[in-house]
Image (cartoon, rainbow, N blue to C red; front, top):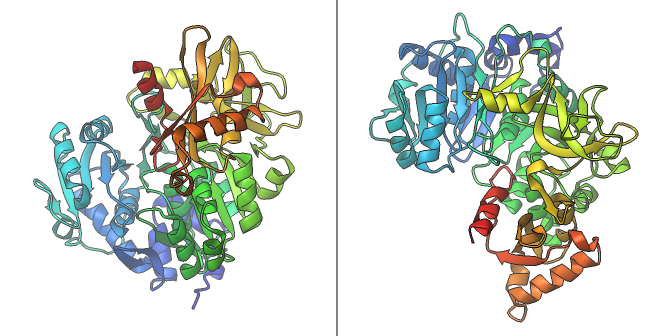
Length: 532
């Protein structure tokens, strides 16, 4: 039976005050101790259990000499211990960096050293990477989760041996996540919250208002790895802050997503456009097999979503799909399904002065003319790229910073994205935005995923090339060769795009280098083609 905590949480600013002091876990442990907080294939934690474990993590850090302001790293799959370490560091006053467990050893070692970690919590599932990575780090505390790692103490003996009662003086910690590295080495995005009043956390306020969480009633589904900003904030940290049960997926699967939504009556989740495409590619009979009517809000972002794909998801799920524009560096806009349907393709209407669209000289672009998007930085809590003053300086132009995206504001002030500046193809002096070409070719019935890049051309400087993953049912048809499919896709594009935008060539590959957060590492494709 659902727990009604409305009367407790409607007191003025009760949740906001708890957010600012690191005591939210304690609040919900008192209000709904026996309600499941985290549900995962590797275990379940009630709100009382989660609060106790978080207190134990904080005390384990203190016992090891880790102090407020120090850095802690976490290499862990989507499991309850991830949440325990997250909440424990949040009340120990330290800075937590979750590490992408898909990284190679040298890449993980780079992040571990770059974030100045004094402690590392590592899932034994990634023992080889963890053991090798710490050889380059100065960690003074190494803890293995769910198994053993050479040179690490166990989670049970280090954490679970501690007192689980609430801390007398919790100190609010921070997180420092690393960018995807699409344009170079990943960098930690650090924002000092010292002295920042909770009311200044506009990201939390805006997302909370849109989410309209009901404690003890709603259920959030985590579809992506928690080392990414969007799953961490949208589907874990924020729902837990409002007393909402969180269900963790450890490995995303389209049909399993539908099954979990039905089983747990999921109300909130976050997806990326690739997930939408995979869900839509399920046979209609499979999609109809599951009851997904419990869904109230599906966030999406992290990568451009082709208009036809989003329209199809809205037609299926109804007006529950909300989009945001932002990155690890910060949130900029939110668009409701109703506003998007009125202006297909928009990512929202920013507040006056929040967005500037500039040319290469820093001059304002007129409405509906694309340029580099610059975002107004907050007066307090500005981000910096950890240890890289030059990268930070390049991101800012006065009081505005850029994520490297290209887009425009229409006459009514609505923001539309056209591409990342790194994805601009210049062929014969003419600009081609790869996102536009991708949004057309993704409609081809054989295309499962696509990347459009510029490759060297002696005459034109660059030419347009598409690299495509083919849907399994098309790949299985022996009479259709890769060459036949590529020719058909080129013709498909020519019927819908100006000739200069159409791919000169299309290559079919087994898998594109797309990260599990939905971002496509086009640099890897460019480098490969330029090397050849």
